[in-house]
Amino acid sequence: MKTNKSGFTLTELLAVVLIIGILTSIALPQYNRSIARADATTALVTLRSIFDSAKRYKAANSVPPMKLQGLDISIFDASSDTTQSFTLDKFVYIFSNSRVSACRLPNKDYCFNFYYNHDTYGKDTLTCEVVNRAKYSWLCENMGDTAISDAEFLMRG
Image 1 (cartoon, rainbow, N blue to C red):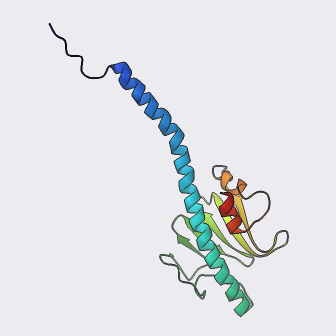
Image 2: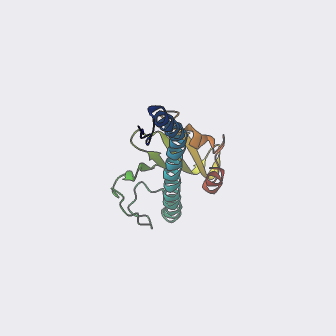
Image 3: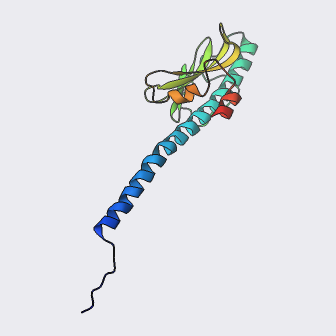
């Protein structure tokens, strides 16, 4: 009598599932970090454009802008141009007297701040601060302890 031995044993299938699980547990966190870094980079580019326009506005009007309306840039899909802040993608962009900020939604876990003039860091500086949780602290740790240019931050990433 001839027995048919085609197919896989339960042990072989469990070994394959275990290997796939291990590879996934290694790859998934790195993928999530890449997505977070891409989101942060997008926010920095948008924030830099807003900040440069805000500086031009401040130079022309002697006061910093407090809303998107009146700036010489157009941001597609910005949710509001009549208030002190607006939402775009995963970030809220906020105008104040001393800076323009981009904070990640929904909990404002971390914020990038471009200062017009900061007492400690000086003029036209970028800072990063983790607000609520340490989940994104690695983004700010890449910047170091002091404020740096956004180009230098992107190179360190």
